[in-house]
Image (cartoon, rainbow, N blue to C red; front, side, top):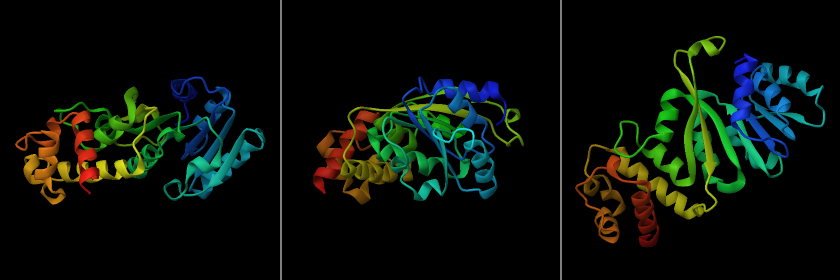
Amino acid sequence: MLDPGITDHIAALAGALAGQHVVEVGPGPGGLTRSLLAAGASTVTAVELDTRAVAVIAELAQFYPDRLSVIEADALKHDLTTLCPAPRQVVANLPYNVATPLLIGWLRQGTAWDRLTLMFQWEVAERICAAPDSEHYGRLAVLSQWCADCSVVMKLPPGAFTPPPAVWSAVASITPHRDQPSPALFKAMERVTAAAFGQRRKMLRGSLKSLNGAKLLDATNIDGTRRAETLSIAEFDQLARAHLALG
């Protein structure tokens, strides 16, 4: 993604970056990196696994010795909050094969991040922002919207990239809520959503059976004949809290 018009727009979607410390995962040749620096980010920390891309970004870092640093690392195996002080954001055109686990990991960290401005495959962005009782509503939507305000803010065709991918892409803006679930409650929500959507055509009384579903449904007054995709985020929150309470 080398078009400065596009990369500048993505940087602008992250909001005012003055005073913000930005982590960029998968900077590639550095198009978005340049835009983040031009937008006034206090610092940009580029995390890249590809040695060839690291060399390219390292050359750019010579021109911004106090603002740009390059870390050769696997972002999935690294706690990125240790790389820069708060206030911090992630702004990135994510490697699509690891985008979802990266997002879940950042959601677990709650208010450690002021905002996540992330590019995904279009279908993944749809799943993050989907409404209940819609085609794309599932576990990713529940976890994301339970922890943050989520919206698609930009859609890009394959031709915006070199070489062009086979799919459309989209930028999602994800702003964590001030009140965040505890680590134990987050794990409970992961278990509940995994069970509920693991067999999404089943009624809840069947899909939640492995989690002592009868007690969960009794405790929350949720009809066991409903299916997971019909539940609101608030109803999933009730189920997660009940699951945590029941042990």
